[in-house]
Length: 140
Image (cartoon, rainbow, N blue to C red):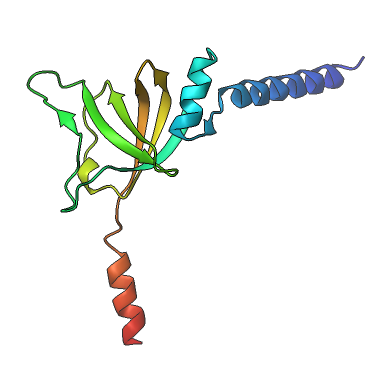
């Protein structure tokens, strides 16, 4: 076999290995109910849950607990998923900046006992440019 063929086969094998390893790390979007079912089956794979923060009638966040003096790496809150299931979420990192302003929250982690333990939190905050774009479009 020619040397170029061996190199090409090596490159192809490396590419296949990278694709397989990245596909095995991918997680899926689920509701809290599905996350509980996966945990009860003994599966510890990471999942994504999309939701909104639980708020009272006045728009204040309910169930959020963060005391940086006591423990800066312990943050809990209640998230309501897209199917309206409420769940306590524990995050063993500091509270993300602008957390209170977020419109939507995506958490990545898994269920452990009665709580969802998040490894990562992604926030969708309101855009400060949307209102400006609407006013500019209306004035044209």
